[in-house]
Image (tube, rainbow over all chains, first blue to last red; front, side):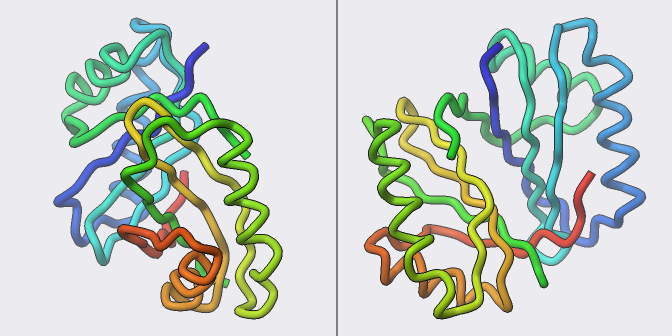
Length: 82
Length: 82
């Protein structure tokens, strides 16, 4: 399954609870697109969130984020990992 | 120790060997700044690399990447993780 990293911006002031709620909203519907959100890292100060996921393609990951209420600004398939 | 995610762009056509060589160049000198590069994900198609690290501050992470020959385009402290 391809792996993806996506970026959300304009999230300044995000709290740990906000991040957890957003992540849980993804998890609740991710099965409908065969996506698995694995981890997310957030900078409340810079308003940026990075999400790492497995999925069939970038469009599936984008659709889950959109339906969960937080569209992603960019998404990249990341086949190389070290 | 704070955790950071940084982004490198304009890396189109990057190979697995290129990524490993770049990562190893960071690892060789990271102790001089008390930085630990933990993982990196790359998109050869989009020319983007994401690096996750621990370090004393963003400037230390930036200096290691610069000295290793691959300055980062942006770096964000990411204290929130799910």
